[in-house]
Image (tube, rainbow, N blue to C red; front, side, top):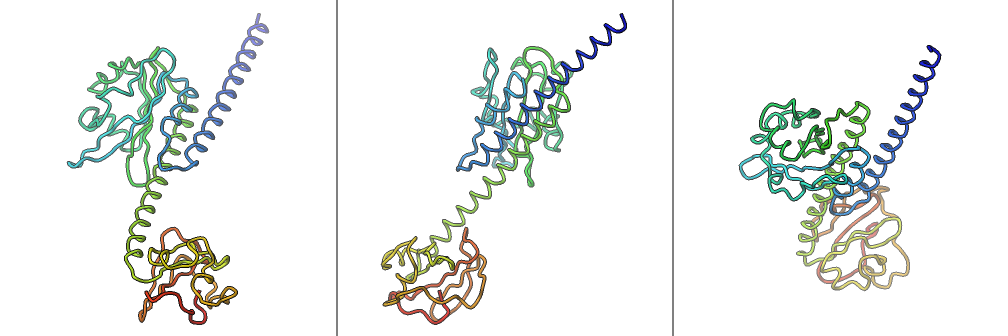
Length: 306
């Protein structure tokens, strides 16, 4: 009898371990796919694709993402931007009450927890306060909320609902889902940095295009024109992407000799007669040089200028 009990326990342990290994493999695969989607680039972050991946892997009834924004009065408002639902679970994506939510007022305890960087993981029946009413209206039995925190702010959260019966997420599950939240935070930071670079480049182009002089940047290794302002595009023989020495120097048959400095990093030398100065062209790479020509058109460059 004891032997049979021991065999039964051993079989159960093996089955549980197998199930845990399968769950771990699924989470690792999912996290890898989420990272792949977020690193693919593009001007918009694929929020819906993330919930479509993480939702099924979490074995939840719902998976959703809320993002925060600050209004004119300094309030943090949260809006749902993506949602995945298991079969038979009603969607809340179009619920107007889940758009521009003033969490500090409508769900003060959850707001305090999430904004401090901690998670919310609890059964709805254990909640006292306005949060309970909001969750019960969505037929939620248990909820897991994980903050999306960038280096500067509480940017939003990713949430998971259990609607069929109460559920306790394991430490292992929570750790993997936290990883998904961190990937979303990194994606937000990259998206913000990319947007700032694009805006900076627009401002730079506007300034350079206002000059009645040729402003160009050339790759010091390939002699390719990587930047050309409006005036330059109007009078150059070859446009951006061509060889700068063919466009800038009359009767020149080969590239200029190497510049005196071996590395220009991202600092661009701009020649504005009769003043010399330094500018930085956004998004340029090391080994790129730049100069300008007066509005009279291309002439032979002084020795050492590229």
